[in-house]
Image 1 (cartoon, rainbow, N blue to C red):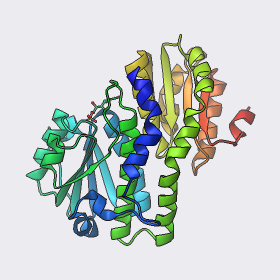
Image 2: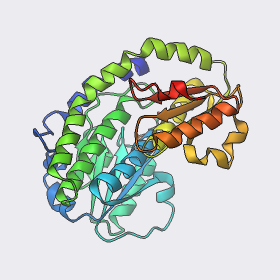
Image 3: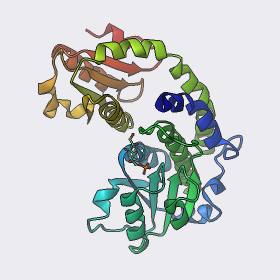
Image 4: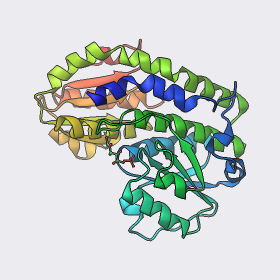
Length: 310
Ligand code: F6R
């Protein structure tokens, strides 16, 4: 079916997103439009607005903006943003994220922002000529190709690639990102299609896990840091496609309520790569196991720490 086809198209889709937009050691700032450099030089705050999966990719970018580019960033669901009064900070850039470029709430948020004092607007979008692209000052096309499956898959990962390029460009223009750090990011971006191919090669193992999951009615997806929105996205996908109730949570919040729900009938999916909060995630996984929860952990290849947890 189309969704599976589109999942497997990700290496090619991301190759297309990167095409012509990376130098040997830097991101080409003009990939975001001719006027992008002048705007990125001055930007002091980024406001991201989107819906659904696109919102989740924006949430990942928030961690990146503040850590990598040193620029403050807020992310809001478009249907909330458009119906409330918000204060616009000086030199704020509005970034809208959308696969289709026609989502009514995101479009309304852009139109509102244009009258509210934002210095500029940038759309990261998959459909050239869409309303969002036409009405924004700057645009970055994700080039994922047509997404026909109802669930956003390659649109999400190409958005993330585009957002990391945006963060690198803003960090560069603001003088916050060192040349060496930018070169590392470029290398990481170039490695993405291969990394995704490696993940897709795990399909048989993942299918086996899915068999165990299929008869459950509830599940919890946990992550910390930039993996927290990835957990939310996992939960959204499961709800939408499997009709299994799923919650995405920051793992540190587990003890403030949802832990009460964990037992052998409730699978817990922990996104736990070997990063700066890995030890904290290990603690959360142990808590879930102590409650009898069946934990499915997604971790860094070659790291067997989680297997050895009591
Ligand atoms: C989830 C999904 C939706 C969309 C949302 C926004 O798989 O597809 O949550 O992400 O409707 O759509 P776009 O990105 O077109 O604005």
